[in-house]
Image 1: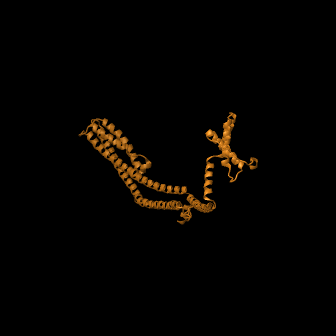
Image 2 (image 1 turned 90 degrees about the horizontal axis):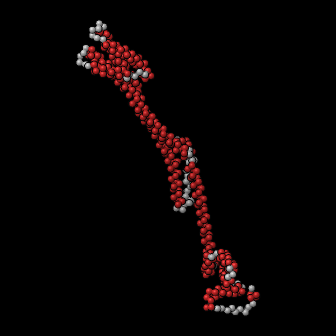
Image 3 (image 1 turned 90 degrees about the vertical axis):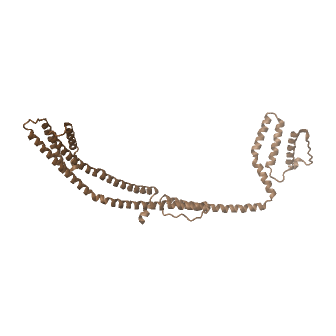
Length: 382
């Protein structure tokens, strides 16, 4: 049994299913063969026995009935020609139905049947010749008794055929009785053996297929609860399920290690971030965040390139005022977005102020005016 279990565990799942299917098929085939044998005996063999007996009995009855009808007919005692002819036809049908296959009825019945068929053929010929004779014929009485003798001969042989047929059928039935008696025990024994085999195969399939699957399900549930270091799933399978369990254990371990590393990294980053927050002032941090947000909303390269393109188009269209406004706006944006220094030259600040005030004058017109008073030399302020 241990070797069978090891052999079963080494099979692939496809092979296991094939073996189980074959076992079930053999059980069904055995049941079908037994039922077929029972049907053959009850409907074919036993039916042939009954049919042979019935045919021989019918022949005896038909011959006896024809003998009696013939006597009444020739003596003109209460039987018409039509009734007599019907009885004769029934006898002919009974003779024709006799089985005449040597392989089926055997030597003894074949010989008797052959004698009956040949004798009946001669009898029919003589009977018809006799019925053509008149009573005044001098051979009438002699021919009549010859017909009686032939009828008696046919009846005797028909009864002998009936007796032999019944005896042979009985012998055949008796020969089959032991088989019928043993058949239930055989079917019970084979059925029990096949049942044990199928149950063992079902147990092995449940143990080697459903068992590992349920273990994988339990381990997966614990992993879903973030328990990545659950014990490895242990199975003895050497099939696809064994490979699946082995890969699952490796994946579980690798995932657990990876999650632990990520957790450690997250804790380290949290500590570094906390230290940085302690080193920076809240106000500078907020200003830096706002500046970063503004810079992320406006792409300086896109903005500058667009303004330069617009300025170039204004120059081509000879719109000097528009070109000057665009250049002033471009200079203003460039200064605000690209200047990160805390201290800048004064000349740059003055240039920014001039550009800004120029744009305000172009916007509000005469409603705004300004003056710049700077005693320092611009060249020295660079």
